Image 1 (cartoon, protein in one colour):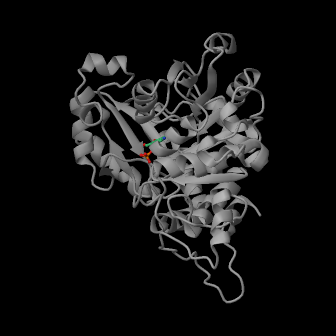
Image 2 (image 1 turned 120 degrees about the horizontal axis):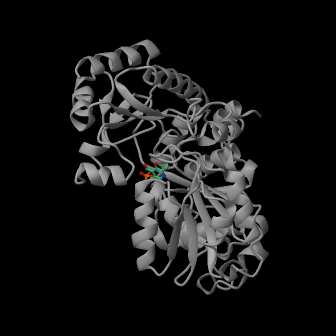
Image 3 (image 1 turned 30 degrees about the horizontal axis):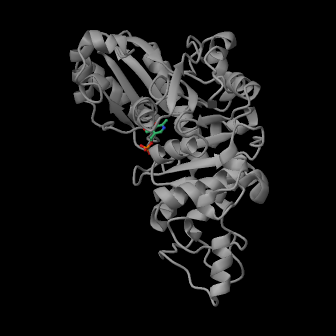
Length: 421
Ligand code: PLP
């Protein structure tokens, strides 16, 4: 199956007389004929669902679909993208361990890595994603256990050189974890470039309709956890009566541990109804991403030629610093998010934004409806203009998430916003 077909048909294969659409199994628990069978489920020697904090048939169908889209061997849904980031790290690091993350990533992930994980004794070093391999290599320590980056960074829109980071990670015997939220597997499949684990905030394009939060962790099954650095995966798990994940589950060691140990303990598993909604989004993902890319490229070209715009940041523009990397990793298009700075600073940006009628002013991105955000008066409101500059956010910067409306309507809306300045 090609990827468009996988979006529709992977994960759920109804048998004779069964519902065509993915059913919502809205049940916390599952019945079995014998205590012996339930015992086997608990021993992980039989497969099946027993409690919806760990697995549920509707959610598992969506996990199988996304694993197939990313080219992984298994996946685990979570209640948010944040939960996916947290579990992807906690699954292989503990107090005293260290990992490396590129500095250009989602702000919420920076907080998680720099503040919350630090409180748990896990240290993160942030590196410039564009630094040379030699410079990044110097940040590895004997206790470094992972490398983390985002395919298209939110909000910087820088493109991760996945092969460079996979190569560095593997040279140091640790996995590369890639947050593929903005690209989606339609535009880029990081596993094909060497990533070991892929995560998403499914809240964004995968859901697409801004109706529910979610996240997912996908395991490539390619990383060798038996290299001596990951005893939690190849020594008996006392919290699971001596299971040895690499021995008992082979290539699925990482994703099985994430489910049966961490999800059991943390309980951030989505409800069946949320997974059902996510599946509806996934069914049209390929089609939507194609139009998001087309519309965003046209909007970026329009902004790039506007005399009212100071600069435009979109990796699909030839003058963009990441254009070459985008050609390599995002050959089908650069997704739907653009940032640009209006001449006239904060005041001009606010007048422009308030003049828009079609684009909604929301704290959200990657949605079917065009939306805008002015970081200087929302997410970064407390900062002075000088502090904003230091954070790489000019006072006139606007983040624009280009939706699926007719391109002429989007451009006309921008035009009327500019007329207000
Ligand atoms: N990763 C990226 C790239 C994001 O943009 C976000 C949220 O904006 C997250 C992770 C966190 O996802 P969620 O809001 O679903 O927890």
